[in-house]
Length: 639
Ligand code: 0RA
Image (cartoon, rainbow, N blue to C red; front, top):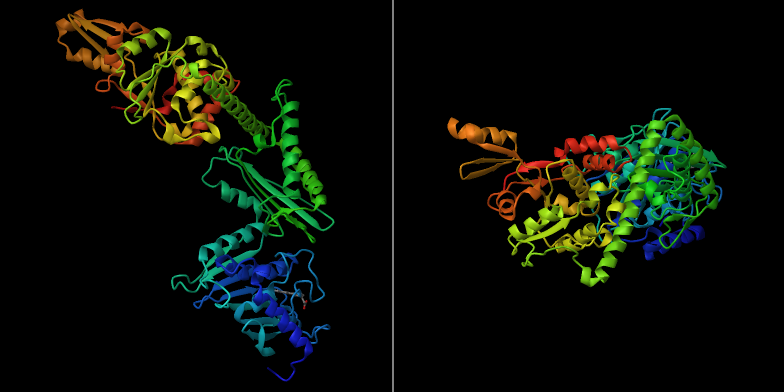
C-alpha cells in the first residue's frame, strides 16, 4: 500500500473485489468462455476507438505465458488527471467500475460490449495488467497486480515519435478465478475475423507467440465489410446471382446495413449484429429486413405475373431459402431483450431497417431483372416444395390411418430384412403383372404404377402426391418424410425404378427422381435408388433367344455370330416391358445374377437441384430436353 491510500481508494478496491466475488455477474462464466471474454472486453474498447474514427489497426497477441496483449493505434487512453477521481484517467478507467468509454469527455456514439465496463473488470480478474499509452511524444505506463491493485502509478517511461499514438494492454487472467488459463487460437481468430468483416476498413491482426512457427500472425481487413462476409459464407456454395446486394442507411445516429446473396441450397444463413455483438435471437433490425424482403419479393412476383392471381403469397420462409444475409446495426443506446439478451428491442430500428432495405432492394430488383427473376423463381420453388411437403405429410398420415389400404397395390416381399429386400416400381399394370410372376417373392416387392401419372404434363409434386401409388411408395419405404424422416427405417436396400425405354418411361422416372430428391434425398445419397435396364433388342435364331441392352451390344453380338446364323437372325426392337412375359422379364431385368442396374446418384446435390427445378418449372422445353438426355443422373453400374 502506498501513502496516498485514502477513502476513494478503498471504494475502488471494494468495487473490484465485488467483481472477483461474483465474476459471473460481469462476464457470464469463469470457464473457457469467460476466459476469452476478457480479450473481447479489451478488444471492444479498441474497436470503440476505431468506430469513433481514430484507430485503423488492432493487434491481438497470445503470449507464451497465456497472457494476452491488445494493441491499438487510437488516440491513446487519456493520461491527464481525471477531475472526479483526482488520478489519471487511464488508471481510473482500469480501476473504477462503470468507467467505460464514456470517460474522457470525447464520448463515443456507439459502444461495443454489453456493459462498457470492460477494462476494470478485466483488471479485477487478472493476476497482472500492464497498460502502455503512446501520446504527446511520450510513452506512459501503469501497472496493476492481484485483481487491480496499483503496482506502478502512471509513469513516463520514455519518448516516442511525435505522431505515434495508441494503447497497448497486456493482461494475465487470474488462475484462481478461471477454470482454465489456456487460450484457444481458433476461437480468437474466428472472432477477430468476424470483427474485421463487421468493421470495414479496420485491420485486425492476431498472432500466437506460443507457436514458434507463427512469426507474422494473420491479418484481416475487408474493404467490403459485411458484403465480403456474405461472400465468405457462400464460398463453396453455388450462388444464384453474382453480386452481393449491400444496402445501408443512417438515422438519428443509428447506422444500419445489410448484405445478402442467395445460393442454391435450402438452408438460410442469416446472422444479425448490434454493435458487433451477435443477436442470436434477432430482433427489430432483423424483423424489419425480413418483413420488407417478403413484401418486396411478393410485390415483384405479382407485378411481373410470375406469381398468378390464384397463387398464394410467398411466405417469409419461402423467400429465405438459400439466403445468406448479414444484418448489422450500430446503435448508441441498444436495448437487449430476452432471456439471454440476444434480441434487439429498439422499435425504431424496425422502421429504419425496413426503409433502408425496401428502398434499396426495390431499386435492385428493377435494375437487375434477370437476377430478380432468379430470386423469385427460387422462392417459388421453395413455396412449391413447402406445399408439397405439407400435402405429403397429410397424405401419409391419412393413409396410415386407413390401415386396410396401407400398402395399396404393393405386392410386398416375404422377407422383412431390409438388407436383402428390394422394391421394383414398375410402369404399367401389365408389366406389373409379369414382374409379380417373375419375381423372387422372398426378396422382391413389386409396386405397379398405372399409366395415369404419365399424363401429369406439369409433373408438379403436389399433384403427383394426389396419386395413390405415390402415396403407397411413401408408406412402403417406411422412413416417413420431412421432419420425421429416418433412414434407418428404410424397408428396402434397393429401390429399383423399372420403366420402359421411351419418353413416357423417362417421364415417370424423372417424376420419381424428383419425388425422391425432394423427400427422400438421403435415400438417393446413400445409393439406394437404381434404374432397371430392360433390354432394347431381342435376337432370335433357331432356339436361341438373346437380349441386349443397346445398339452397341447388338452389334457386338451379331459380329460374334457366324455369317449363316447372322443372316437368319431375327432382330426385334423391344417396345416395352409389357412385351416380355414373366420369365423373360425375370431373366433380362430382375434376376440378381443376370440383370444390369444403373445406380442413381446425386453427386452434386446443388447441380441436381438446378435440373430438378428446370423439370418442375412451367417451361416445357427444358424438361423435354432433359428427358431426351436423361442420362445425367445415372451412371452405369454392373451388378
Ligand atoms: C476517451 C478519450 C480518448 C481516448 C480514449 C477514450 C481511448 C480509449 C481506449 C481504450 C482502448 N484504446 C483506447 N484508445 C482511446 C481521447 C482523449 C484525447 O484526445 O486525448
